[in-house]
Image: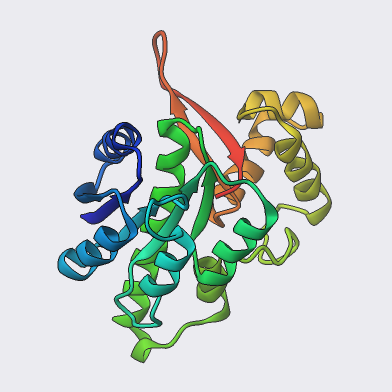
Amino acid sequence: MMRVLVVDDDFMVARVHSGYVGRIPGCEVVGVAHTGADALALARELRPDLVLLDVYLPDVSGLEVLRLLRTGAADDPFVLVITAADDAATVTGALHGGAAHYLVKPFDAAVLAQHVERIGRVRGRLAGLAGSNQGRAGQADIDTVFGARPGVAARLPKGLTATTARLVEGVLRAADGDLSASECAERTELSRVSARRYLEHFVATGSAVVRLRYGGTGRPERRYRWGA
């Protein structure tokens, strides 16, 4: 279970975000704060795994809260910055402060779930590393944890080519929303089976995410979007 602290100066927004988190499997909201001081106090008391952190707080900037939360200790919480601020300086400050990611309001529950679930996967990977191989990490493990994208040519499964992988990646990046394997196949002029192999490779390496769309009869449709 990933324990989440929600920080937002707006009571209604905090309630909405808490509701989003509550619908993510494996997550629970353990506290809600509306000021920077309360956020820091609750973080010390509750030791959450993840903090959803607003930037515009009434007493102190969320970036200062981020700096104080990220001490360098192994049990520091992950921080997902959630804010209306879209200026480069704030984004840069969040990145340099150690934020796991940055979401600009408004967004829907599915977008938040994607990022929270990715952080959950990273936490699991780190826990696995700590418990095996004498706590040592290979480069592939490090790339996964840091979200590195060294290029589609790296570690392609047998039968997949870098040229076609770049073609599928370009289509997926350019899509307005997510794509099914059939839609990707049509745009790349590949077979559906081939397109799906590349799409599933991107999901396996963390470059893309997949969601299930239910409707009608039969199996749910798998839909893919670029990005973690």
